[in-house]
Length: 308
Ligand SMILES: [Fe+2]
Image (cartoon, rainbow, N blue to C red; front, top):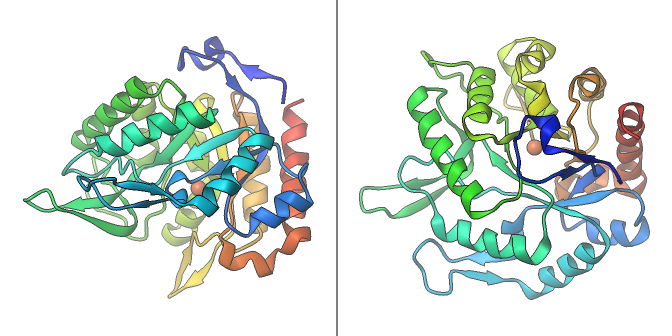
């Protein structure tokens, strides 16, 4: 908890130091009682800010309405744990428009909650028509790994960094269809993006595993192709099979392959600041309190092998 990564160690990626937090949980509503019962089970809590408000849509008056009951819970969590922010609505890959009102809302929340870092996915969820009317795809749609897209997303990350000085990370995404004739591989795209913008990487090991199962590649080879000194956070999670594909459903405990990949990766990521366990509340019954603690303790044991 006490160590920090200096800006020099990550190649002047950031203007300030990044604290090494340890092992955290991605918040979902089933964790309210768990965190009350087991307050020392994790070192930090990652939140999805979008869960705490109603968003009436870009351009609407009084667009963001914070949900009082959820905010009460968030304030209790913020009083006890360091927070990180995992966003789902920067929609970095939306060709139509970049949502500056969402960025302004997040700027306000960074001032309020002091997130240690923030992140979003290499994907898009917002789709716009010719009249700039916005629709939500309902899932994170992968982007083509082309230079034109790289330039567009790089510009958006730079806009985020200008507005919010907190370190920003980009997470590798899941894809169920492999787009043909792309100019870059996923790893080359992420590396170039990180070099161009000085963003960090959020390596979701379960997403790598999901893609490796569905598209038949070696996940360890994928991981070693990344610029691993840029990895600031790791996500671990579980999944399940649906329609002949393996999915990133966050279905309870991590499979053994994810633990194996975590053990493989940890000695290779010198600037890692946190390992976050993600599960969806609809799979709480597969974990219960004991199961959550078991996953966190397993991650802590791995973390402490390489971090004091
Ligand atoms: Fe993730």
